[in-house]
Image: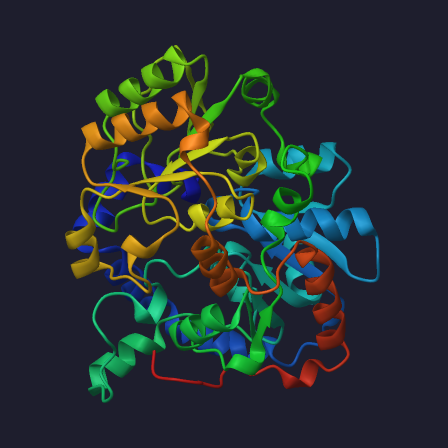
Length: 426
């Protein structure tokens, strides 16, 4: 019920007008006394560090946490994964496929969270259960790479000295994770300060959601493919263009209007292809045409279908960096680049991203039409290799295996957690 409320249009309008970060901080402050009390009590509970609970934002089964969960569940190794969700549909789907999953506030879900020595999440502890996390080792897999600024680095630079009420507001935030997943020295440096995690606690393993894109793009883990009809349409199309944009902090709807989506689909249709479209889970999707367009449902995991795309249309989303691992063409649509820079901010200059950058709809349509008409008009460059290596380091797949090894190592020395320790000003 809470998830449905968070996804409702009315709730999103209210939150956007107040400000997502303001709402989050206020809720954190309201909950702070109880959270501090639970930290004292739960911090003394003996935990099983080979029992791992995992979860994803808005109770979806998606992104890095879901891919790691699928890997661990199939491996049946010493780490025992349990998926925690507030969605009964997600729990039932996973159980029907032979996986262990528990509703967040069921007695089994609560018991799993109380016993688990490790919490692994894509965004925040609340993906699983923030209230029951004190005393566990926490690993944040995050869900993107630093094109745009995130967390403490978002917006203006952080002041070196904060007043008392600013420190009080900071106290309402979730504490930094004990460990943070990154992919390269550049990403570690950017995320270390953004998340308040020292570099030595950053695991440069790459992202498990991309392991199949490197090995076999059209063969994602079966647990992530819940929409066979959409998959079959993409698999049978002569070519597919993916339209996947990031969200804007102040917007309720997706950043692309229905007319542009229709024209993009028509462009694909003229050349015998289809347009695959999915809105970010934080915004409402735009209406799409029925012809030459495949709408991926809101609960679909994007990366399970990304390997079926031959061309990507995106903006400041780090899905571009995932897509570049396959050395396939990216067309960027950046009509609001100056506004985005002034509000959210960029970690890298978006004009340096590998691919073709457009600033207005007509330019986007023209670029896409030319690219699908003549695929040889695009080629991989040496500078693209340099950029991808800056973001991904030596990653060549096998992130799930590497994370498993690091989790096992941390399970042998759980006393090193530093949930209450602060690495940097946040």
